[in-house]
Length: 484
Image (tube, rainbow, N blue to C red; front, side):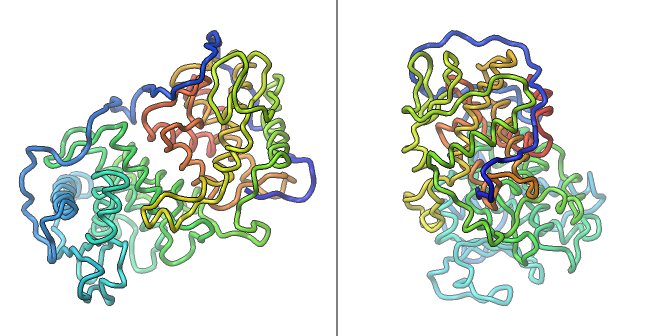
């Protein structure tokens, strides 16, 4: 986030009312254990919990790749290619009137081994990468560094995600004008389409139609979202740059679009609709890297921002107090807790300051423990998630259960949307990368952003991320409508 000049923030009033009925359950006087809850469905599919990955009875894939080994990474990659080929063999004739032609070549490489020339470069230049090469109609992947890191960090579905994405580029070139893709199409449009095609493929898999893989709509899709977060662009990159793939916020949007609406919707992604919603933007000179320290002073600015944003609710705003992050009389969710008894948000400023440290991207790519935090907006959003509990209590909304958790994330998204627009005198404004910091927080095991007042969070990251995005783009009214 960044601070603008002037003490007072004039944030748009994003909440006219939160017209929800319900009652606040009695306080338990204990710290929550962060229990998972199930919310509704996932784009019409039931919420499922099981180990995702290659089916035990999956056949040996009838595909070969140059350089492929007997490693688990290559086994998953080849099965993914066979599987996504099955998907498009069905989809292209059914929805686009085209015959599916398999890609001409596959390449598995280790960048530490002798160089192989491919697509005008060498495999040494393509470390930590997977790509589609149009002139050679080739899909290639780094089995030495990238795939092992993905599998270790996020599980087998991360590998399937990456290969599904690269195959999506091969499909773009087969569709041609049916996908609006030619030599002049920007990189960001191509990447958004490929992420969307990946989502449509995973929907097919989640429906049980895959011969090779099974994916749960909770933990399995969480692996996918975590891997998309990992391969996001650096904060401050411009969507207009050649090679731009999008922020995690943008990439998860495209994936979820494909999962919910299918491949034909993905083919309709173009420059106009990408420009209307893309959040990737460069830093401006006032951003100073996009991070502010989490201090008593900046928390005071946060209080002002939230008070103004939710002034339309017509209720007494909670007061944010630094007194340890726990409630003296009620359930606690440290490092930030909403305390209904005295309508305060108790915070542990020292812990939140650690969470607010900048993300260590180098550690992320090395697969090491990060010395950094999740970023300033992740810390502010945790506080905001407890603040909106007080707003919901004030209007009589239920504070417990899955819908309460998703409504909370949605309202935080509505606040983020309000402070994303410069020129209205806001003291706190979003900076590039802030929304990705919110995504990082949402994917944490003990996330508060989509948790109810007791800290119980919705099990599926898909629903959590979607609720934040809904509030960001559509405002608080959508939170009321969708999570009543």
